[in-house]
Length: 371
Image (cartoon, rainbow, N blue to C red; front, side, top):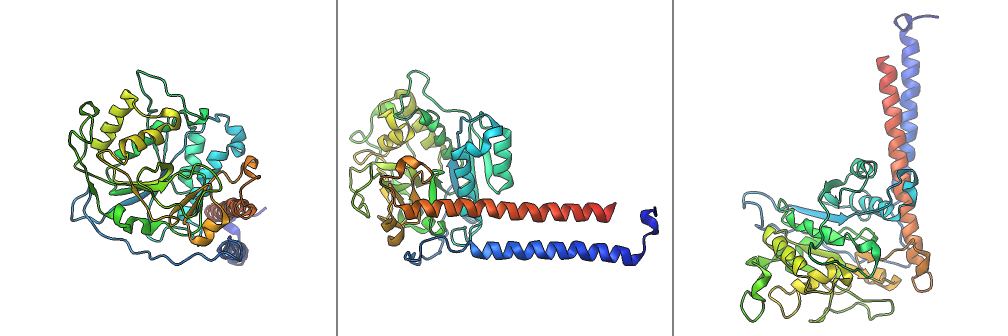
């Protein structure tokens, strides 16, 4: 057997040619797959054009720097067995959301806006590693719960949701858009930061008529913009914002503020809000219509629809909010939306399968070239 040192230049050229041919074939198949993912909506659905203009403004950073935006979600899966990782629907949904926000041709950010996933300590290192490898910025925060009373959420799986409030500590960003993991996107979300109620902070009405004296210090200005909670299927669409409406806890945009976070912590310990919806109840109390910092409604039907129908997509809603994988929704949810979700999840899985094949081939070629 001849040693590597005695191999002819022709042999080396042939081997390298075959390896290069393999890379080209896989790359072409990836490009074909990538282009085929551009359409995932039913043919009857046309999404209205939305401007991608982003404003410049001064927020928590100095005026000499460009504004910083981020998308964010919260993952607190209690499925600890990593051997059944594919059965963790919320972990999978987080991966689908990464793919939609950062990679899908129709829905990805056009301005390289980062995607943050905050997790409590019990989310496994394997799951964090996968989310990080797929482009998310994963940040651990401690669990946040009241110390002198016990929350009783309507759903046991909501027990960790107060931890979501740590997002208000991300003061390195000017604005953060929070989305639940069970979101199906129809277009990019970048231009939400151009909305007037997101761009321009509101002044706090800090006086004896609007605030209880024991509830803590408030910021001079704040930003909290969201969508009305529809409360169930069959509601009027689009749902116009009404003064006494409840903000849905699955989609809102805010300006991080440690003062505001500390105010929430005071409210959390006092417990003078409806805790059945956990952080949604706290936020709706802190930002109630007759309080010092009422939340502001985003344009109806433009950015998010909970309990969605196909009409919401046709109207142009940027996100459709529901557990499309849950067979318990089959009696009322439009089948087209379920199919859209499974196509998106399949495209996500195919995208990463192709990327890993290319990575493995390149790594093998480098190894063979060296050795």
